[in-house]
Image 1: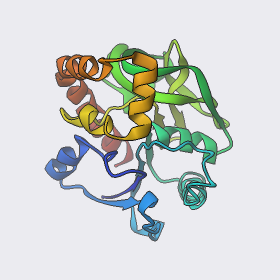
Image 2 (image 1 turned 180 degrees about the horizontal axis):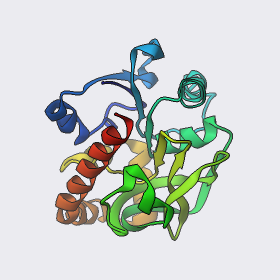
Image 3 (image 1 turned 60 degrees about the horizontal axis):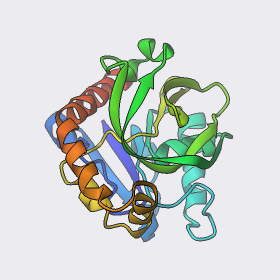
Image 4 (image 1 turned 90 degrees about the vertical axis):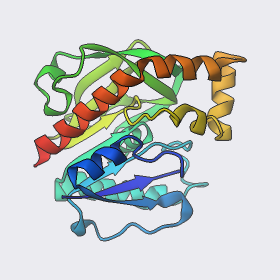
Length: 237
């Protein structure tokens, strides 16, 4: 098994999943698209993971590499029909690349917030074992508002209906962050775009409070990440 990872900023990497890749003997290769690294031959890989980033799916003027990335996602999911997992921006790119739509939210979601699994998720292979209601880290002001044709809704929150979805049999998108490590929030807070939204939405002192809240939930975050990792590779072979 060889996994291709699309990155859009250095600090948004697979996080705790890097440890799981090593422990499971699964090879993975990251491509830093925002740094100009080219998309490799897709035929050499068995699964595609697409991470988050501060840009939006429509920022093709300032991030022209989004266009070939979306084309690669369409090829991967629709033509090659290989396993896909998108997190945050990767979730939104899955929707956008396959004909869905993303829009700015009325209320951004930032913080440790509740996410609820749907009834459909009970039979979904990626979601097996996850709590029906769980605390998750959110850090986004754009959401999927129109899913791709045939998408199955797997998780929702009050401010964002499409928190998780499955497209076809082997493509999943998750809006909330499941890759967390102890240092994740402090690292992301150093990105100007993330810090600005955090200050605007949560106010002064929000970073420290969010770090404290996240550390309190970190054991559950990591347990959920492990479940998702095992479920994904169990489902796709």
